[in-house]
Every structure is written in structure tokens, then in C-alpha cells.
Length: 366
Image 1: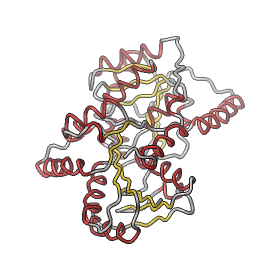
Image 2: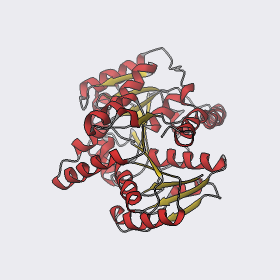
Image 3: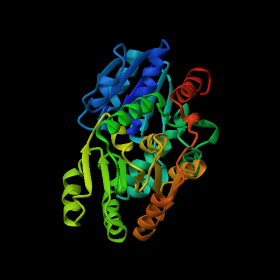
């Protein structure tokens, strides 16, 4: 079977990482895999299997890739096309409609749609989202990451529930365990101990992730409860602005910007609480991996799927969105709690999740 994967680029976001893993899986089990990006490559390009046919359309704007992608579909004649994130999903659906061949189109919705479109309030953004909403009905199948996201998509864009499947993001437990062993060895050699609480957030430095609130809330935490350290793992366009901001509010000595890293576990294993203050989220890969590392979790209640996950697995708590007092109270409670986080997350294992993709795409799920 020929399977075509489509993304804007191969930078290190959660949706991109999962898509690369799914593409590699289908290649490993013997399918012909084609991977196309509209704008550029990225750090994840080196993660693709050598035998995968990768090409970049080099479009100046993502929406200008519709016709070039249509031509690629005609050239490859895939049996299935797959994309994730709403703009890419729309482009793939339209490109397939314009093509001569008619493959099944499976799209993966990686965000809570109602919150994302609420944040996009300008007229041109509203028009864009209306057009995208109408295109989703033409997909052969839609993958959501949680029950909350499925319900939100049904309610927001009136999508037939029979067309939507729930497949969680995967956790690579073997990779995490190998990093745990290595990290424990390093700490033993150095005799490292933590005499102040250490927190961590793994996220791109974009507005959606709400870092400004996080730093202001941590300033309040410092005033009430004392010193702390927080690792800011990730990079993005807001980095310079955020570095200036933490200096202005007086917490620069507490905040460590690590930049992008292929090994976030070195910082997760040093931390006791993972914080996710985003304005909105789909199902954060970083949240899953932090939980698998044994960290307690503090999330904003503006993230329905994150709250659902935290409550179902009893791994932490949620605070009221952008409420500094509630944030500091909940964070202090997590630190003082003597109970360890020992959630059974085996249902998120990489093999099980990739098998779910295989059954859905290959064995008649669509």
C-alpha cells in the first residue's frame, strides 16, 4: 500500500513528532511511504527512515501548496493520505479533491478546535476557520486524541461521530527508561541533591503556551514560599522577549532556558512538578512523557483533555485559568504532598498506539 504523509515542516512539535513515528511504523511493516512538507524540512527530517521518499514543495506560503500537492498526489497515486493540524488537513483535502486519483484521506486533529478558533478572532481567521470546518466532512476518517476533543469537534463543527476515532499519543517507555538509568548514574556520580523545588515545562516558546503568565505566577510563588528553579525546555520566536521579561520581574536567577534539545528527560528527571499553563492544548506529548517520568503535573483548567487525563490517572491537579493565587496554592500542595506519582500509563505504549493507527488506516477503520 502507498501512504502519503503531509505536514507544513519537520520542526520539533508534538504533532510533527507523532506523525514521523507513524510514518516510520508504516514503512517498517512494509508499506511504500511518501512524506511531503509544504514549507521546509527541519530537525525531524533526520528521524525519518532512510527508505521513506521525502520531498519538500518549498512553497512561500502553506496555502500555496494546494496545486503542487495535487500534482504530487497524481504522480504518486497513493492509497491513503494522512495529515495533522487543521490548515494542513484542509490543504490535503482540497488537493485530493482536485486530483485525478481518489485516495482515502485520514486527518488527525491535534488541538481542541473550539479554543483554537476562539483565539483566532480576526475576520480573515474566522473566514479561514469556516472554510476549514466545511472541508472536514470530506475526510474519509478523523483521528482525535481524547474523548473531550472528539466531543468538542462534534459540537463545534458538527462532525458525524461515526467518522471520528480516538487514538492517544504514544509514550516510548523503553526510551524513557534508558534515559532514567543514565540520569540516575550521573546523579550518583555527582552526588546531586535538590534543596529547592525544581519545576519543568517542555513547550515551544509560542504565545499559546502562556509563558508570561507562568513567570508572573512563579514570581508570586517565590514571594510566598521561597526559592525555586524552573527549566524552560524548548525554543521559539518569543525567547528573547521572555528572557527580558523574567529579568524585568526579578526571577531571572530562577529560570533556566535550555533551548531545544533531543533529550528533555535530563531536565524532567531533575524536576518534581511538570507545569503546563497553555491557553489551550490538544493532548500534549510533553505532558504524557513527564507523567511517564513520574512527575506530578499542574495544568490550567482551560485544557479539557489535559484536565481529563490528570483526573483519570490521578497524577496532579488543575488550577483556575490565569489565576495566580490558585496556581501558587496548587503548586505548593503538590510539592508538600508526600504521595508519589505512580500512574499506570501502559495503554499509551508506542506499540499499542501504532497498532491502533495500523488497524484504523489499513484494516478497515475508514
